[in-house]
Length: 199
Image (cartoon, rainbow, N blue to C red; front, side, top):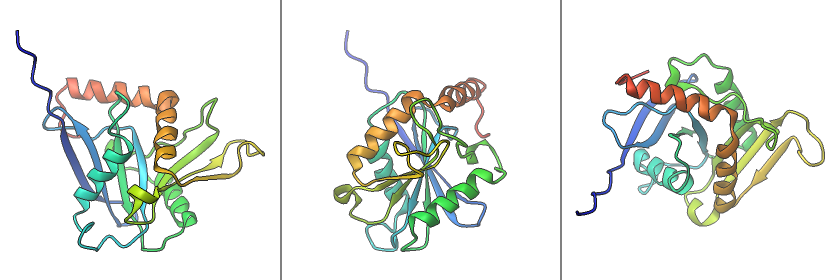
């Protein structure tokens, strides 16, 4: 008996305007068409000029970011929400933007931003990924953990990392214990079983 052909994975994209009317783009992978956007997400903030020839195709850029951060691990459905800030925006700008998105009333479940990452091992309510250079594959990217529930010497108010490998490890650790992920995954699977095409 011959081996089964590999199940094809499709990339899906959703363009939308965030609550401040700025362009944003969600990307995720699924084996089914059509596909619902997963409810579990990480937020990426682009702070360099993406109008260059290489990055002008925003879907191609989002696909590369997904492959660099989320593609190689985890069995949970997950999406990457990519926000395009003004070139040169600071980490503080991105943190403030993220807080505003958490507070915003979503238009539908596909716009939900996880309100807290706090677990026994992670004390931070908020985590964002900042990409400040088109050379992020070589230079890495910044991960910012902030809004600590109990800041102290071990868990400072803000925490920065700049290595792509470190970022992957930290996100994998978060997904292994994040309290929201199973709840979101159950909702997502039930919606798929019902054949829902949109939230």
